[in-house]
Amino acid sequence: MMRLLTTGISDWLAKENVILPSDTNLYAYAIRCFLFGMLPLLMDLFWGVIFECLIESIILFIPFMLIRKFCGGFHFKSPLKCSLVSFLIIGISVFAMNTMQKSTISVSLTVLVLISVISICLFSPIDSAARKLSFHERVYFQKIARGLAIITAALHLILLAIGETYWAVPIGIGIIVSAALQIPCIIQKGLHKCNIDAVE
Image (cartoon, rainbow, N blue to C red):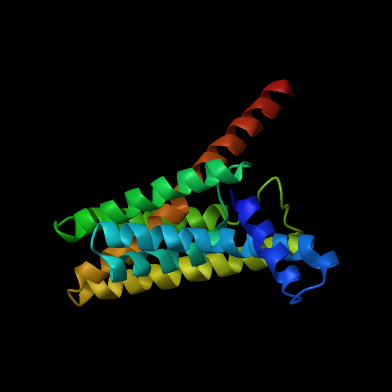
């Protein structure tokens, strides 16, 4: 579906003499990357509208995507599986945020936020099989992931301290989801190390 859409757009651009016909594949790839990159935001906006908390869902999305970009985590190889699971994860996150905003469980949430920050600081970045990071990239990504996690957690705590729990919750959820998506990779690496140790 995505491929048909992007190919159609690039063919139309070539027909309208906006791009050279020889560049259609390159532009189709660029459009596909752009649309795929925008997909999580569109999913977030969708769930924000469904649960009638559009601004809150955007606030959740900002720390989640910023930290996720640098801390890494679990990825499916199939774009379709990745999109479907992302759609569900974002939906569950917005639902959890919406529920927590109406209850008084800020202490439990803050404990999870602090555990998530520690996890992000310890294990980031987790690179994917498709894109292995160099040593310098790992150092850079680690610094950014740690910095973002600490800054957003501090903002979460400040909002709680001044009684703005309603706005602290989406930021906290954004941090927790970023850390949660690292867990399958951490477990996988741990099992892989155990298997190597057993063989040795």
